[in-house]
Length: 75
Image: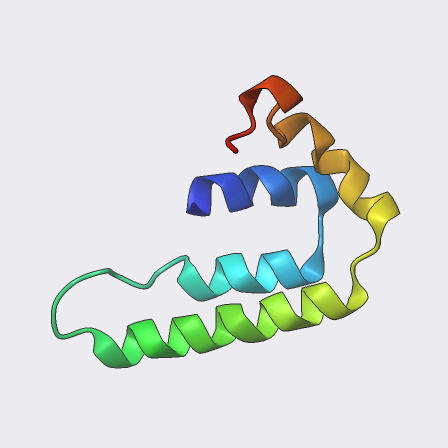
């Protein structure tokens, strides 16, 4: 998932996607790391809400090549 977000960021250069990536860049997914994981999740959530509020379709058209083709859709 993080790799895909990096691909998206390279195409759209969005500050909110950048904030999400920054939030998870150094957090380790391991036992007894709950506080850091919750903090990172909170930051990603805020960036996602901000992105959803301000993103426009024109900017997002840059990620069209990353979307599956119609014959690859499931259901």
